[in-house]
Image (cartoon, rainbow, N blue to C red):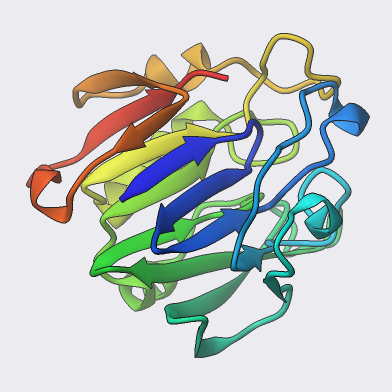
Length: 210
């Protein structure tokens, strides 16, 4: 199993099938454009820094709505949430994607803008790898990010959607999130390769470089 980060909320997850989450075009947000081919693209919402499926090569299936089905061998569930703390009145809806590859369960929170209800956390269930936004301004901040991790209790947490050098969006830096983290943090570079058996029993944080 391999996970690579293409900046912002865009990840490439592959293990036979390749899934790409929330691709951006790079130029519009000040980052390098992702160079990636996929079988499946998941879009959490229709904002320009998350919906650039056209840059993904390979004629992938694109999921940009609520589903609960298996596509290209990947089991997918979605949960409707909001891009802000006002039930979407400011920035609209957001989709959480839970998907499974080779027995590993991933959960991508998209641009989550509020703490999750106990009901949604219960419905999400067990998560092996959680992608959580932590940059504040347009999503939850570092404190709420760690609170969300503590609620979901994944084996691996991967922070995303925070300020990077060159980024044109005024997000908060990763350190705002890390200041709240009480579990081990590992810096894994731009990508990481692992087996399901390698996953820890309790939460650890993987920080990617871009």
